[in-house]
Image (cartoon, helix red, strand yellow):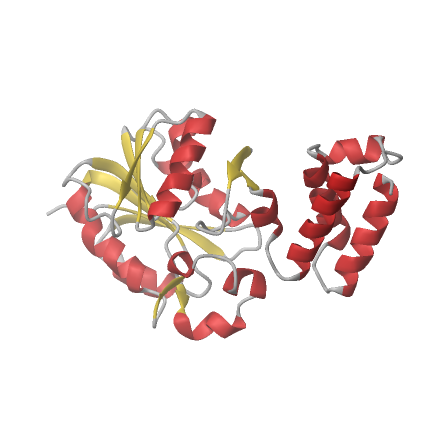
Length: 276
């Protein structure tokens, strides 16, 4: 079985299984099975797969056909130009969340301390620690997620203090210049309508906020003035259709900003801590 034949067969299987972008998925899974990058596949289409490589590739295809996201199979996802390790204990970082980084670099690049609430893989905390001179902290309710974030920070050379706690309960008062978060914002009532890759594989604690979808936004906005220094920024990712309600939560905050994603959908909201 050559690389070329394996890709043709894998692509056909994924097409028949209604898996999105079947050719690209087959390439990623085969490269992972070979322990190579995708460029190797194009330069070595005649490479004969060993029995072990073929077994790995077949298992990866089977897992993907059952709905397991490609990122959980390979254990990798790129975010802001860096490779993060991911597993089912953490949400897969999305390109849309990179807009949070962009807003921070525009509004609060001079922050000396920052907190990422609900860090998951650590994508936001680690990226901002490496892109700015700020001292970074991160929280997560899940010990497994905190472990993944700590490993990503170590591997990428970022200094991030990680605390296991609910939202920011363990963070000292008036200790941060910046709080960022991509909070859970999916209402429980929308669970059945999610893609199976999301519904069946990604951690519910990172997806679902509660009955309305605003429960974690409400808690972050309520506690942020305790943690932020005067003039500090709160920057959060927005769920689809959440702008109006989150704006209302921030009605007494200063310098409210909203940034759209590449499709024009409001994706990030930022505001400064109100002063007494």
